[in-house]
Length: 333
Ligand code: DON
Image (cartoon, rainbow, N blue to C red; front, side, top):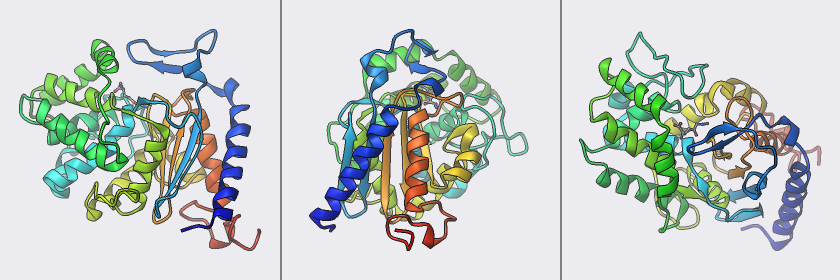
């Protein structure tokens, strides 16, 4: 357990990081996402577009927060990595690999380009791959029991027993799901989906519509950093043998067609969603959650990317960083 002095130091640095990034980046934003309204750039920013939070959760159960850390937002694509973990637990690695690859696609998240050599989506972090993993964890023609299992898993990751789907978000997503629906039917015609496409689509959009806070995002990340056990509750959310697989796919595919540049610049496994959440995992150490709805052209949070890059750089967290690059603990301090 860190001493109060170390906690205070982390809080001061986090607050400084938060304040500085709050005043930067607005002009880099390409758009904001609204369920039902898609991407747009509003003339005047509303309160919800201005929200910003950075949270850190360590593997020994310490949580540090800055900004709007309790504000709920939809998980959106961040849900994909948790459902991928569930598919691995339910079906095993080989069966999952037969249905969805682990290859970065280099395409946008809603691409309808498939790995034709293996007749499967490229990876579980693009929408087509998420439809495949949702199909694997779903029930034939009935969404409710599978949704209960997904919520149970997400509750174990966050430690929040009350985690729920926002029905308003879900209905708006469902009304504007033409591309995902088309992707689902295309996949079924190619033998990539087995179940009822409408049920799989609804289950996918319900998991996207689960509300979490930035603090909970950091806790989810810290659960993965801690080998699948939530450090604050001690509950296991994912079998340790699957944590490595989920982190590997996040590392290579989690930030869409920016994944290569993220791996190069930030160097820690991460996953983003169009609501503006970014979750990043430093195995054995730390979970990071950032929430800021302004998105770049790839659909990643602009502040999420900038903050993770700075934390990684300052703490020497890049997976290929030399141990002497740790700016807090290394000799440069
Ligand atoms: O269109 C969808 O599938 C979204 N509701 C979720 C997509 C998402 O978060 C992708 N993100 N960057």
